[in-house]
Image 1 (cartoon, helix red, strand yellow):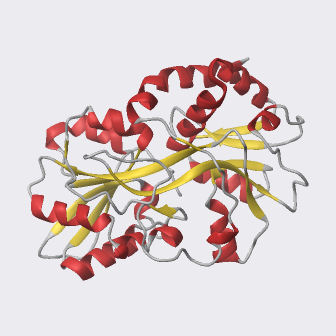
Image 2 (cartoon, rainbow, N blue to C red):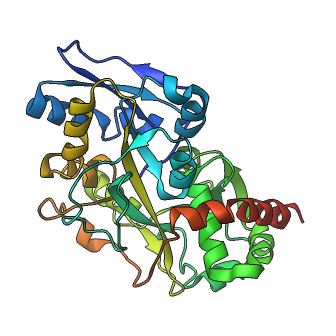
Length: 323
């Protein structure tokens, strides 16, 4: 699951079509290594319509544009930003049957439609780290020479997920946990891509990522040395969603896209297009996913809970690392 989001939006030009749907998406989604191009191709094959991606930082853009937004649909809003997105009042019910979902948590939201998910996790290289911490508490008390890179919860959805994960597991001790981790954190990055790049370049022993991240190394590189450390305390789940803009001037095409999101044609792209789990069953997962280390306990806050805790989570991060 790639989560890097940059400031500002960029239009990703596509071929002309009789019908074009404007899709606001994170940068990663429409990049050449993201799932967007394959999804656009599959949608065009099914409908004859073109997806025109406009990429960048979704929520600030939507808040700025309000009812004047040119988006027909938005994709890539994580559960932890759903409540803030809902409060813009821009979105319409998705109208999609949710009975085919395969999420590890119950999902009943009638506006935001999940399209993929994974557990937040610390990924490490078995050739460089003899023994990874076997619990979050052990990570908290790791030797100072263990180098970790994480993302900023103020700027990154994965960083916010880590903050919420710590808050959910440790509660009032969250600030102390950040303080304990401070000696191990070599860098806090604005996004996932920078952090993961540092890890793969050997600048850190562990990186905040996802339980599905090792699948990329196994399948694309034939490398099974990258693994996710599994903690018995449970792992915070990140779910990404799509939503239809209520004021779209193409409601029928927007609804066709929403119906497409949980279709096998879309969902089959997710495992190797976004290196995460599809939100709905679309056949067997690619060979290699069976090697992943997965937790027994999945943790997820409701969007309302996540939004309510955001300020405290950021405050604990700032105070803990500032000690």
